[in-house]
Amino acid sequence: MESVQIITSGSKLAEAVMAESGQNVNLCFQCGKCAAGCPLSYAMDYKPAQLIHAIRLGMDDLVFKSTTMWLCATCETCTTRCPQEVDVAKVMDAVKIIAVRQGVKPTIPQIAKFYRAVLANVKMCGRMYEMGMIVDYKMRTFEFFKDMKLGMKMFRKNKLKLVPSFTGAMRTWKIFNRVKKIEKRNLST
Ligand code: SF4
Ligand code: SF4
Image 1 (cartoon, rainbow, N blue to C red):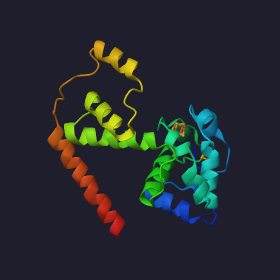
Image 2 (tube, rainbow, N blue to C red):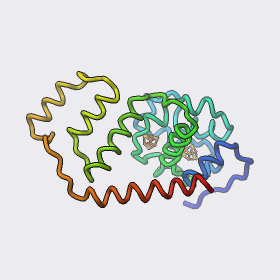
Image 3 (cartoon, helix red, strand yellow):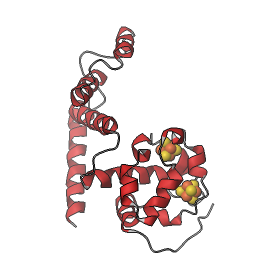
Image 4 (cartoon, rainbow, N blue to C red):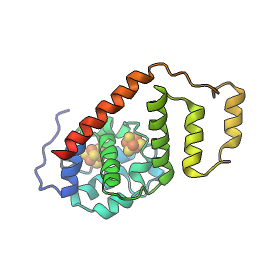
C-alpha cells in the first residue's frame, strides 16, 4: 500500500528519531493498528501509537520515562501492520538509543542490563554463550537467585553449556569494532 504523506513541522525528538532510524513519525495518522497488534501493549504505560504521537509532539520527558520502548520485544508486528509504512520497531530502538545517549536512566534498568550482558557476551564469544550471559546479567543486577529453578531445569536438559565455543569470535569482534567506528563518525558529524 502506498503511504499517505502528511506534512507537519516535526519536533526535535521526531528529528532525532529520523536521524537515528530513518523513520518519519510525522507520517503517522493515529490509526492505532500498531497498538492493536502489539503483543506487549497490555503491559506498556503508553501504547505504541501513543508513544509515536508523544514523539511528534516533542514530549521528551513523557517519552523517555515511558516503559513502552523498554518492553518492546522488536517482534515487528507493528511495523508489518502500519499502513503508513512507519517502522515502529525501529522507532522504539531509536528512542532507547537517544535516551541512553542523553544520560536518561532506563525506566526498566534490568532490560538495559540484559542488553548489555547479551552484547558483551556475543562480542566476547562470537555467539551467545548462555551460561556466561546469565552470570554477567546476575552480576549487573544482583538478582542472584531469581529464576534459579528455571536455570537448573535448563542445565539438566543440557541447554546451558559450561564451556563456550569461540567459533567466529574474531569475525564478530571485528564487526563490533567497525560499528563502533561508524557510530563515532556519525556522532562527530
Ligand atoms: S515491535 Fe515492539 S511495539 Fe511493535 S508490536 Fe512488537 S513488541 Fe509491540
Ligand atoms: S500503525 Fe502506523 S499510522 Fe497507525 S498509529 Fe501506528 S504508527 Fe501510526
